[in-house]
Image 1 (cartoon, helix red, strand yellow):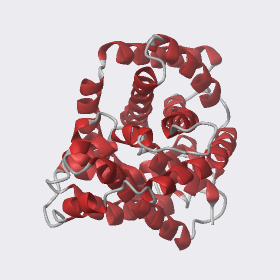
Image 2 (cartoon, helix red, strand yellow):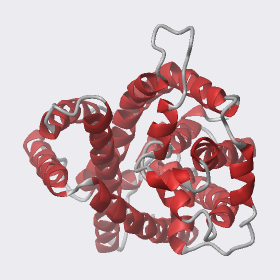
Image 3 (tube, rainbow, N blue to C red):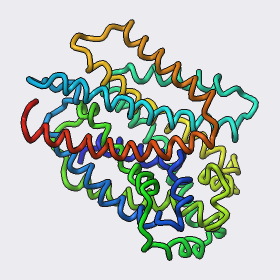
Amino acid sequence: MNRYFLYLVFLNMIINVIIFVPKILIKYRYEGAVMGVILAIPVGVGLSYIYAKTINKFSQKGLPDLPIKSHSGVKRLYLLSIQLVWFSAGLITLIGFIDILARFVNPEMPKLMLLAIYLAAIFLIIQMPTDRVMYLLEIVLFLNTPLILFIIFKAYTNPFFNWDSVLEVGTHILKWPSIKAFAAATYCFSGYANLIVFNRVIKGTLKARNFVIIALLGLINIFTTFFIPIGFHGSDGTQEYLYPWVTTADSLRLVYSPIERVIFLFIMFFMSISLMSVAIHWHVALELIKGSFKKEVSKKKVWLILSVFTGVSILGIIYFNTILLLKFATYWLIIRLVCEVLLVGMFFLWARRRIV
């Protein structure tokens, strides 16, 4: 079993809870979201299996490291076309979580100051070697995952959790999903795509049991993400919240804990998880950009790239409010699904034709 591969997928599953995926699924709860969740499991696992098995043939090499003997222009276009997808994935998580902090933790603190703090930490991480980024991810998951799982356990066992609301939504299982609901549901499994760079730290072959574990974790995660807010706030009431899971965490209490309100623990744990999620996506984007150049990229060029990241992030914080960001994220998830299928298909063809 290769734990690093599972870390990448599991991180994406956890961050699913805090961004806009629950809101999108809940919006379409009567319009095929249940079927979308069910279909997302085989599709997500299937894509991860094809892609991981394909890229695993190039032992400890990411896409920027592969020497393409011909079609170098194709490689450069290929890299340039997917850099934006990875950068925007981190950007949506970053802006969304800063909005959560501003709403629920410290409304008086300027968002740009929160952004500056986050960017300082992110830029420090993404410039590290790929293996060190993975080691840091391992530490963060090791410290935070047990506590997050405990909060989820408390939610399922809470006496105020209404299973009737969950069953009511479940009665719409036969409705065909919209593309928006399906795209949101498949994002749960998208962590495997980070192998485009993080294959550098994958040693040996990926066994079938890795994908069995992903299927089981994905099944639990995606139903938890979707149904727990519904169980707490009702099948109709849950639609009223911008961040259903944050509001759900505020409904939980730890009576004998030094901190009784779970929302503060929940947000505190997700601060490091969201930081690592953005760092993973932007590390991939940075390495893909560096791989677009024939020569080694200098420190000056790296900081020029990071300044572009900073400028776009500032514009995002200034011009995106919560509603606009939700709309953007909804359509971005559809674009991401299309790009993901193309990524898997094109890389599979490259491997089959042995042009690398």
